[in-house]
Image 1 (spheres, rainbow, N blue to C red):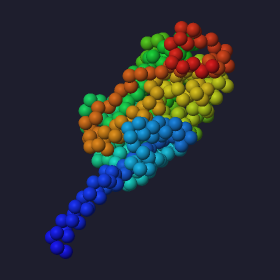
Image 2 (tube, rainbow, N blue to C red; image 1 turned 45 degrees about the vertical axis):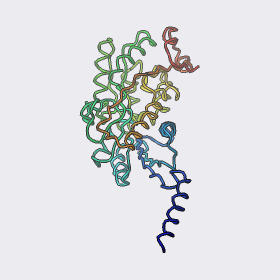
Image 3 (cartoon, rainbow, N blue to C red; image 1 turned 90 degrees about the vertical axis):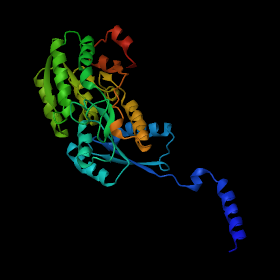
Length: 329
């Protein structure tokens, strides 16, 4: 081909490609994100949707600019290591590990390179997941729920709703490192309020019947549930038990109240999942997770179920109702 013909061909190619949009000239890379839940698909559907909404708000389109690899332990914490290993083997761009330090720790054991975004973790520094909130270091960052710092507030609210309260059963999972710190905070706050805390441990789904028997045999006057994916997956079961035994109950998230529990106080889980998308976005754009400060919630919601209160024969003080962010009639 003559030099004149080559020049003409080059000009024609330049004119043709100049008129094409950028995404037609180069197909954007599809980001692959893992999401590991300890609970069931049904129990967490609104949370995975909240994460998707967070990604959409940032301009991502599922199936075109990102795909989700969802895994569920179905309320079986012993399955987490296997599922974490499976996700790590997919060589994803980031893995979101919500619910408790069990999921985050399971993923961490299998990778020190794939970025991990934790969600709703009680104390990531105290449990050794990150070096500090300001400078996490390593491959982990995300959002904490500062639950142990809310223990006193939850007990104060419960005592205000239940005059004469003295014995409180605390339902928690000792296998979760953050829950151990959370229970110690709750125990300390209870004693400061002159309440008697009664430890009730639940590590597996099979433990609930025994735990419920313990609550009734110890003649508890109310139940407090600490953050726990296992309890979250079984929240209708817990609420039903409390209802049958006329026990006022306090929870860390409003989903328990939606299931029939009496009260909850804590950060919004859907909000935390939407904010997790912000972390994933920054990581996909090149920021190292260890350089992203761990975020602490600044907004907490008090939700009260007056229908449940009525069934329990409990009159919630008007002053408490007026402070609620939402009241379920």
